[in-house]
Image 1: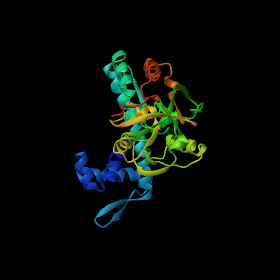
Image 2 (image 1 turned 90 degrees about the vertical axis):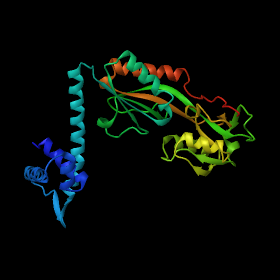
Image 3 (image 1 turned 180 degrees about the vertical axis):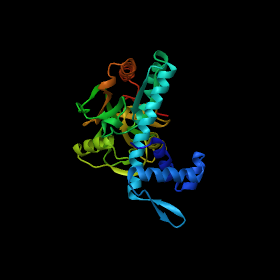
Image 4 (image 1 turned 180 degrees about the horizontal axis):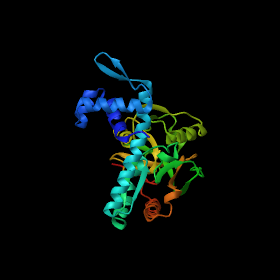
Length: 307
């Protein structure tokens, strides 16, 4: 069995780039670090480092072992956190992943309720725009966007929260800003601001709707996120189309108008790991997510301020 402490020392050497740097970071002598490396090579039967001038260069085997060591050490860290929770009397933990546009709109309400009702639960929050392929890497609860009726995979249950229609965010003085709704095709000749640098599912969904309306939008500016895209709209550079939750608080001078024929829609789900489905923390998280979704924490297609 591999010695975990030696793996940690080895990982430090690979990350630091030298025995001397690793020794300084760990508070060891270079000799002690070298002894750990020698012992690890003997345990594994692998050549992990090759001489490169006066230093060492990790071999291909070392890089492969380092990647696996990261996973082992991460799981060890989780186990140590669990032990700390149990020792201190806390009642466990709950990991929650969410995508950016619900971060400010929904997650503060979820965290506040959990902190109030279940103060002993340690929360691990992370931003994630995609569902990891490996079940082991997935959060206990993840708020995701997907097509209606999607399959979350074996061992997980999807709870539908909301169907979120897209809206057009228009600059001051736009010819359509006074309308209650706009046909998507009416925007075909406008200058568009792209708001999804990652080219994710939400953008693909929008592009499919544009294709259905008979055009492909002309993107004049590429923004990395919704707030930046809305700032470009405020500056009069063009328009952007985004889910209504992302347009919950448009800046001054930006008007959000409902889209029709067709109306792009994204469905939002809470995907829960079956292993924690019936725990108080997971039940509370899903309940609050349902509440904020029902209360319309987002623009929901409403018109924004005119100035």
